[in-house]
Image (tube, rainbow, N blue to C red; front, side, top):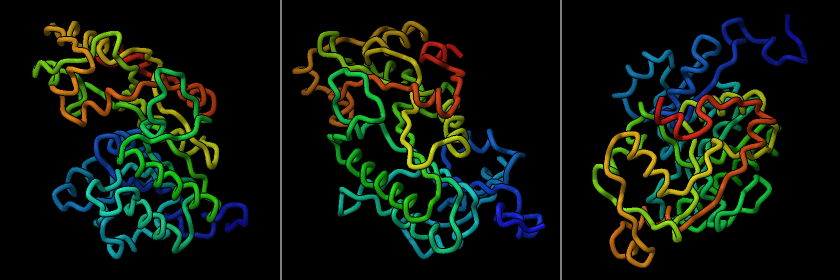
Length: 307
C-alpha cells in the first residue's frame, strides 16, 4: 500500500523497481549495466540507432536522445530513480569553459520528480599539476587544460542540482581507465608505435583504475555515496608513467620505450600526450574504500594487466 516514507509505494507495481539511467553508456557504462542487470530496470540514453541492438542485448532499454539537443531529452524527465552520468563535455563548444551537455541533462531531470541519487564521472585532471604530492578530495581544483576546466564547470552544475533538488549527488574523480578487454585499454598500441617517455628525473606520477573496478565504484556511489560528495576513484598503484610503460613492455615481451628529457619531448610528442606528462599527482583513495566500501579486484595495474 502507498506510504509517505516510500514514494515508490504509490506507483503501479511495474514502476516500483529501481530504475537506473546511464548517460554516456560506452565501455564503462556497459560494465555498470552488467553489475546491475537483473537487479534493477536499466535504461541508457543513446543518440545512435546503430547501438539499439547492442544495448538491448545487455538488458538495457535504449532511449533515443542527444545531449546536444535538449528537446530530445524531455522523455527522460521522471523516468529514473538513479542516474549514472558518464558523458564527457563537448570539445568543440564555442564557450570552451562550460559543459552544456550536463546543463541540458540536469534541467530535464528537474522537470518532473527527481532521481534519488546521481553519480557523475569527472576526471582527476581537475586537480591540475600537484608536483607528485598526495591528493585527497579536500584539495582545491586547479585545472590546467580546457577539458579539465569544462569538468570543473560540470561538477559545479551537479552540486547545484543536488542542493536544489535534495538528490544525493556524488562526483567520482577518475584517472586513466584501463582494461585488457577495453578498446585502447592497454599500453600495447603505444608500445608498438615506439612512442618515447620521459627520463626518470623528469617523469610524472600517473594514476589508474581498472574499468571493472570503476563500474563497481559507480554502483557503490549510487547507493552508498554520501550526498554532495567527491571521491577519488583510483587504485593503489604508486608509479611513474615511464615505469608503467616499462612494466607493460615486460609483460607483453616488447621493447621498453626510449627515455627522453622533457626539453626534447616537447619537440617530438603531440600536445595531448605532453599535457598528460605535465601533471604529476598521487591520488588518495581512502575515501573510496572507507565510505563506498569498495574492495578493489585489481589493486594495482600489474594485477590488472596480467589478468
